[in-house]
Amino acid sequence: MQELSDKKVAIVIAQDQFRDEEFAQPHASLNLAKADITVVSRKVGKCYGKLGSIVHARMALDEAANLDWDGVVFVGGAGAGDYMDDPVAHALALRTNERGKLVAAICKAPTILAHAGLIRGAEATCFPDFYDDLRAHGVKVSTSPVVETEVNGAPVITANGPQSAFAFGQAIVNTLRGPLDPFGFML
Image 1 (cartoon, rainbow, N blue to C red):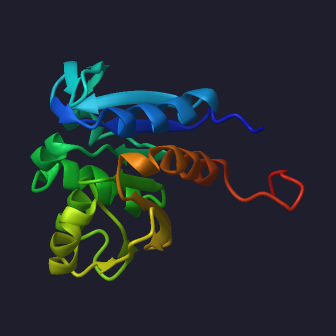
Image 2 (tube, rainbow, N blue to C red):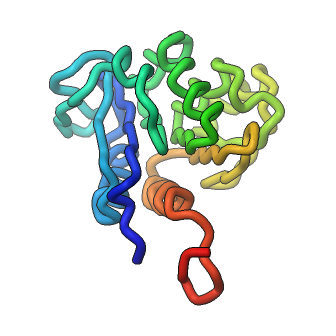
Image 3 (tube, helix red, strand yellow):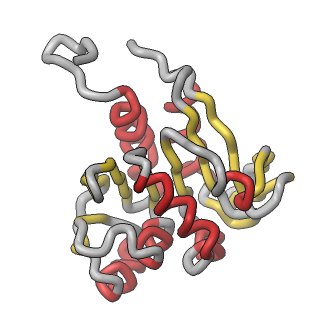
């Protein structure tokens, strides 16, 4: 298994009401792959999950938006709405995509990408309550649990909610690893 120790990944969570498993599963997958993970939020400090998790954000969103990442992951939950129309969150997603790097979002968080204009015309999924919001922003909505696509030649992954968190995490790791031959070796 190829390690991702050379890959820098920002996981963006809300200060309050992020969805615990949508953070925990991708974080665990990236951690097992030895990626260089930085938890990002509005400000540095404690962040509180809907189900009681407490996670320490090591970097503020303003700082993260000015750095180069191999991947940026937006975690869902009610708190993700804090970033839906946030110009700094939009800039982080757009800049990462423009650099040809991975942008991923789960549950409510794909609305951030839609409001940024990143996934207009692309296929994506989200928590069903937000399908109409994606459609209103020109997104082709899929009911698949996880959707992997390319926007501007760069990978974008969206997922529909907590039940897809494990598959979402695996898709992120596999995308960061790059293509494999039929025997599982890097091409």
